[in-house]
Length: 165
Image 1 (cartoon, helix red, strand yellow):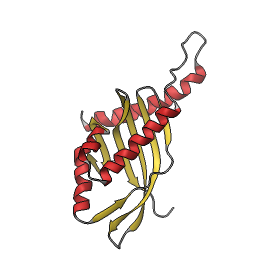
Image 2 (cartoon, rainbow, N blue to C red; image 1 turned 30 degrees about the vertical axis):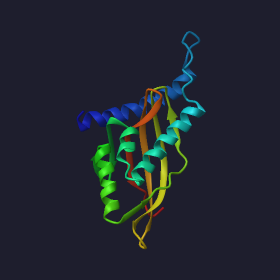
Image 3 (tube, rainbow, N blue to C red; image 1 turned 90 degrees about the horizontal axis):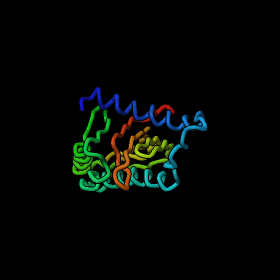
Image 4 (cartoon, rainbow, N blue to C red; image 1 turned 45 degrees about the vertical axis):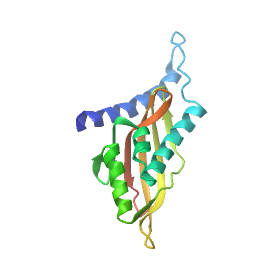
């Protein structure tokens, strides 16, 4: 898909999730109840998928990164668009050059539907070379899709947090 179509999909997905969440309060008695997909198990699976994705990046585990993402996954990082392979290669190259990146995923706000979910969180960590690590913080969001019996990342956005806060 072209960049415009993918951005439109990401926006649609977030609007659809919000609409699904609020639609339940406006249902008439003639409509069937909303499916029970937003469960504690689904939320834990989504959190675990995001955490294992970052663990795979930290270990340069390219196969695990691929397993945790859709074939058309992309991320907005450092002002650019990356496929899962490109992102994994970028992090591995940084590691090979001696750069250390520590991620600390904070509590996540989740919107869960049966086949799609969104997550937002603050990522507080550090980055730099050995002995010269600097504190870093990012605001991040992701869209995940349900695939077979698991959740996989379809989209990731990361932006540096304003250091003045």
